[in-house]
Image (tube, rainbow, N blue to C red):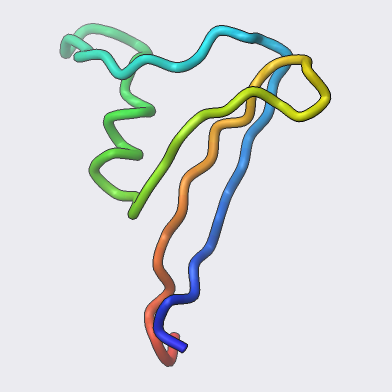
Length: 66
């Protein structure tokens, strides 16, 4: 116990891998990866096994007793 994680994955058909960027205050998008970096215990993107698109995932460590 103590090293359990919650893993969330999102897949799409685009082969363009996500790139972190710095969003300006007036931008309406571009903050997702900054949020993942700040809040998640790890994240990455990888090509899908079927050969179409990619999967982006992040992990959160679960608190013991939660």
